[in-house]
Length: 195
Image 1 (cartoon, rainbow, N blue to C red):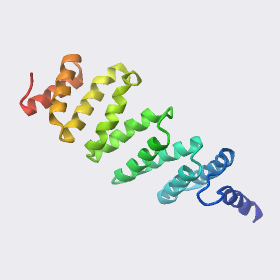
Image 2 (image 1 turned 45 degrees about the vertical axis):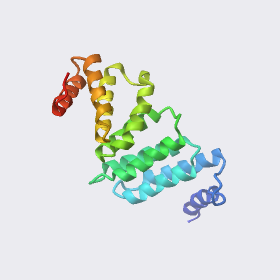
Image 3 (image 1 turned 120 degrees about the vertical axis):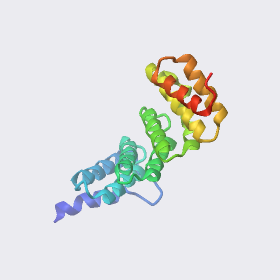
Image 4 (image 1 turned 90 degrees about the horizontal axis):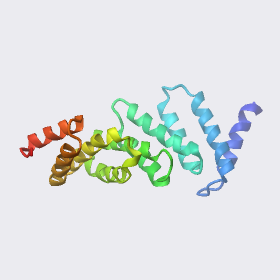
């Protein structure tokens, strides 16, 4: 009985005073304990797993496990049937707010763009595309036209049709022969404005 109680007492004692984050080393121990509990759960216990990931993200914010927990929360939300786009967006938005310079922030931006597009939150996607395209060197060169096309679609969906049209035209001019240029031409044709 003592063996089972002791780990939970350690986890409880590491939580510290309400509102005060424990030292990083204590957060790491707490995060490992939380992730061990997740690993021991049946994968069908989604609610409990999500609650544990939320706890790791909130109580261990200075650890890499907090970032992993937020990513995993977004995955759980996306993989639900039907997907919980709102919960996925909240986890990813929290990640970017807390860790804007994290090495994996670009992957989080890309996933959040996917979530925004799937939930038709185009106006929310626009600033993320602008952020992503400010540093195009972070995007493989072959992918830049496709990212620009998706940005133009977000502009169009957000009601900024003139900006979208100009970007479609730019894609056609700068990346002829690409799939993105073909799709941009289709969008221009649909609007009756193909150059």
